[in-house]
Image (cartoon, rainbow, N blue to C red; front, side):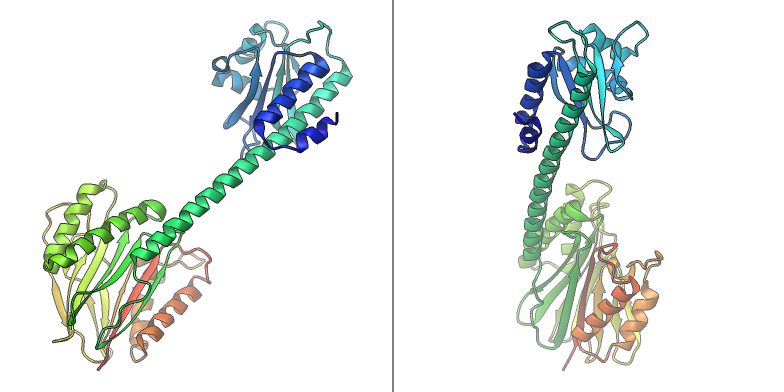
Length: 399
């Protein structure tokens, strides 16, 4: 039969191992053998990520790291003869093995074939050594392909899980901000990875009041998104209780502190707009100060609050209040906006954001947000992957 065709027609590892075993037994009457292969991502030196694909005539537990390391250092065909063999190789010799054959592929050792004597008692002939090299290469390439397939399947599975996680996360945040009399609003949420550690929300409390919230969880990716989900659930539970912003922030801090480690925390900002007196009552828990640009071009930073969430339970919080008059613009954002990195690793910074917000204040909320987004992307040279999650809400007071 065509051995090459047999190896190339399957990626099932158990079938490939059987083919290798049958070829050794049928062609050369060799019973004892060990076949080691380096992982797909490691074809250099050393024994990191070396797989024992098959072993006959020696127990798996006898193939210790020392034995594998010694075998991996063999650079050419080596007969296991004499008393001056490395310790690991002598273990194979004691188990009745007679040869170590490194299988080189594209200039690197990709696999190692350890063989016992032929059952006929005859020595290995040159043409048989040549056959063993060819067989080892066939087995190596086919097994490597099988690992590639496994990695691809695992990659696709993880990508599907991340897609579902992103879909769930998007449902936890508003797809668009609710319309509210007297306000124009616009929002932007760009994750640096599949899932984000940033959070924003807008919750209509009654016909007169609406709550806006923005948060930034330490870290990125899945761990940060899980903590973000915890925060979202906490806020949604507190809203119907009609507690004050200070009390609600303290409760959220307690929950986050109790459920996270010392190295995880959340910067958080939320505030309630009341259309009856155009007041905006807020608490800033260690977050970037929201920027209030007045219609006349003056600016205020909303800083009152307290410590960020998740550090120390029982911390008190205070609130601040401002009035949003016609033409005033309030921007709430995460540090992914101000800390966006240029190709030269320079941060965009408040020194660029604040003048731009003042310059754009006469435009609509959507135009202001688009202007900031455009400026950030130009600064980062339209980076395909952002250095951090970027979230922003722009609120403009109207008639």
